[in-house]
Image (cartoon, rainbow, N blue to C red; front, side, top):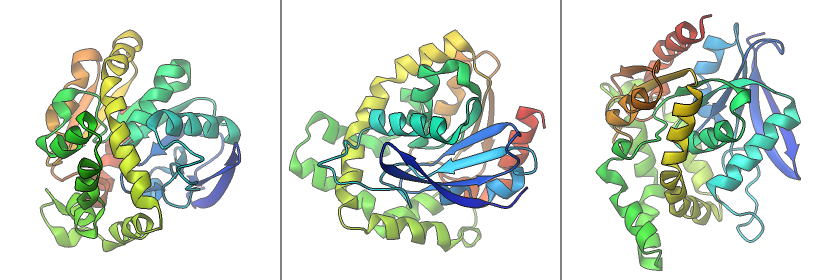
Amino acid sequence: MTGIRYRSADVGGLKIFYREAGAADAPVLLLLHGFPSAGHMFRDLIPLLADRFHLVAPDLPGFGQSDMPPRTTFAYTFDHIAEVIDRFTEVIGIKRFAVYVFDYGAPAGFRIAVKHPDRITAIISQNGNAYEEGLSDAWSPIRAYWQDPSQANRDALRDFLKPESTRFQYTFGVGDETAVSPDGQSLDNFYLGRPGADEVQLDLLRDYRSNVALYPTFQEYFRGHQPRLLAVWGRNDPFFLPPGAEAFKRDIRKAIVRFVDTGHFALETHAGEIAAAIREFLGT
């Protein structure tokens, strides 16, 4: 049951592509990717866990192989993305699940957890932030856009969409860059290069402020429900700092925090270590 299947689900007329592996009756782990990636970022992790878990890794709307409808017909906000993924879980019939959140996957996953706390069995946050202290100075130009959504400030963020920026995200903080496959970043750059993808991503960068505004709501959920949580964090991440991982312990009494000596895309170099931590955490 460790073979991966590549499927699509119709979610309100929107095609959501997803990877799936593991026995249908095994505990479910929903894998939510980040920017600028897609479900392919879990390509090394899924085979390491598929003997014990039913793994589901969707591409978020506008990413990867999922539909990227025009901005005129689809609002590219994190509220909307979370709504689609919430409905996706219902369409494919997963009722209770642990969720692995990374980067953009965190605000989507945390919104779902706040809405359906009874459906969440555990949270694994891999560089998935929910605290102000987790945001580095690299967010400064994005914050400037939040404060003044001018065309000039929007255009200033286009550097984040360039191939060299994608490579930076994959390699910064990695001890040996030759250990990072070019495959993932090449796919990400392909998707970023599609017509209209730049404007979609700039819309999401603008809306990221809504996630920061919801940090108190996420933290209230953590305090009130005390979900099982493992924060496994690339300690050299230039965007989401280690204090963001440590902060989970402030609100979740039994939160477990582990650091791996790598950068933002920790699975590129530490999939085995992260898989082992997940197995230990979930008790399988």
